[in-house]
Length: 443
Image 1 (cartoon, rainbow, N blue to C red):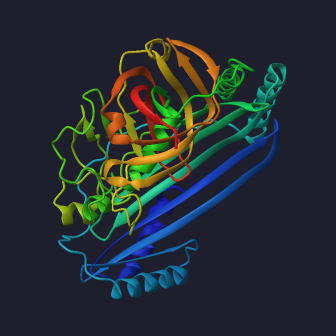
Image 2 (image 1 turned 90 degrees about the vertical axis):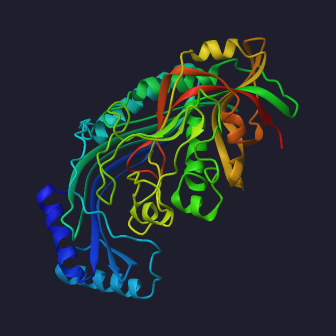
Image 3 (image 1 turned 120 degrees about the vertical axis):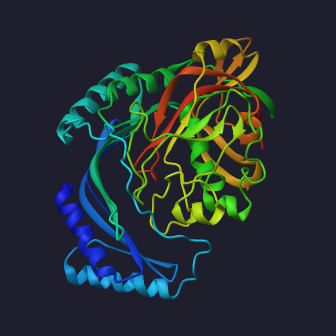
């Protein structure tokens, strides 16, 4: 992880060399450690120190982007030449009014909370979890990672931003024969890996040996946060971005200001919630703020970077997370509002229901306009009959429009849980458990 002085000095070298109408750059460095385990044994412990500089130049309203992992002046000059050549071969961006010019303060947020977890300390905690699993007759698989990063961005307009950031993330799967359970968490500080292990054991051993099958039809579904997060990752790609709004595939098109979901459903991009995974600015230097995407069921806005804010006439949302990104806006801090129930209350309210821990093999490209997706359940799927959890179910295929699902939310838990994503280094999703009426289980 590089210091503010070193990070901004490297940015300045790139911006000074850009020789363009305007330019901006990002410099990110990280110190990462991850322990992977299977069959209740650590099989890989990997540490990596890395850094990358990315430059974007604008020449005649056309953009070119290039990156390097070597920061000597000659290597930066080579990167600049590649970016300038890319700009010369690119079409000018329509309606583009220039890069962000800064001037605003960014929020003061708790982004760095050193967990102080060494690989040896992780190994000892995991060994304790493995021992407890052995007593319950389960074996564990999963991963436990920590990361400390520095993030800097700047432009030829004088924008300079710098922040440090820590992330701890763990995924635990408890396996007992053909039965399994799952738990996950992500945080700026430390994670209680033993609590995750206990949660996974509880799911893996619940109603051991009691199995039923169900017919293909609709059921009340109790959907846990990890499953909601998987859906949100897909919706980020197919419907929340500026690109999907422009190409017409997003359900936001023609629906802004209209009711598209139940009134108890609110979804925001919220990087300033200190209890979530806060971060103060996007990589174009815009200050982060809470942006409602869907508020009380009403569609409010997709998320955009600076270029597509200009192009689409959408107020800036500070969602430029990659210079030259084809999404032109992506929400990396998705926050689903909670309700006032407990998970147990939602289960008791279901007459014929399916309780889902997580989703797997999701395909979100069936019909982006309605967010139609298909996938399977995994690592803990249970049958509910007359408000009681009565049996374990095999992994189930489902096909469901998310717009339809979010229009039939019958309950939300007060508790919300965090889930990370391999493709999201800055944040994740925080969501409650939902009760959704009429979920389509079957082919």
